[in-house]
Image 1 (cartoon, helix red, strand yellow):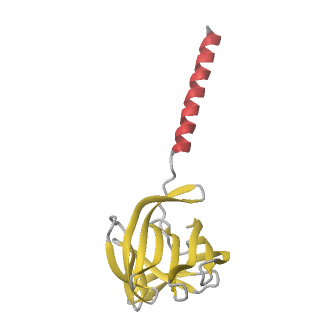
Image 2 (tube, one colour):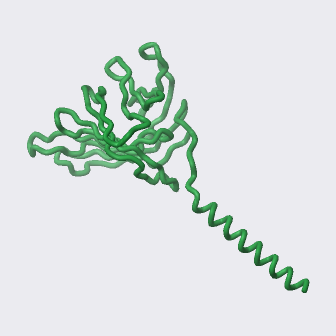
Image 3 (spheres, helix red, strand yellow):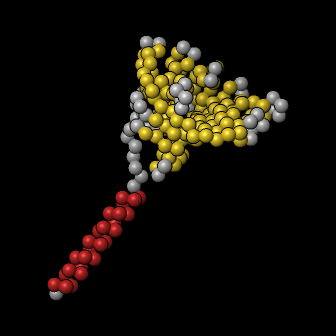
Amino acid sequence: MLVRNLLLSALLLLILASCQKEIAFSTTPVVTYQPQLGTRWTYRSYTYNLSGSLNSTVDEFYRISSIDTLGGEPWFNVTDSDANTVFHLKVRPDGLYQYTNNSSNLLCKDSAALGDSYTTYNNGGPEVFTVSGLKDTVDVGAVAVSTTFYTGVKNSYTVDYILYNKAYWFLEKDIRRFNPFTGTMVNVSKLELLAIAY
């Protein structure tokens, strides 16, 4: 009787332990962090030839290296591996803003509905961004991250693609330009997030 009770108890513990492991492995980790001073992104950076063919691939590091005052407000100074400023960014209740053209400009609207459109200033001129996708996921390490997909249009050409998440910011950022020799749009550069450290 004692042996039977011990075997049943052991079997019950084994079943419970198996269930707990299954639940633990099936739960997607939730990132509650927000980029802050010192946050560092590791990107795979691609550059392309004018023909659109791949020219080079290198791992690049972006970091929030300081907080600068611009237009009377604090902005995160995001620098690249060579300590050059790439963006001045800040989060507001309606999304991620960048400081460019001596003013604050909405870059990634959040929260957003599919089809939302807004005019902003990006890469040297006015640009119309549209929310083109919601809830797609991108793997960053072992974590599947939910994204919002934005397309940016200038002069009737789609020139920017951004995958964004408020805890990671840019998961992917593609820039395209018009090739006057072929009359087509071609990739110029692409950033793909590999890792983030807060």
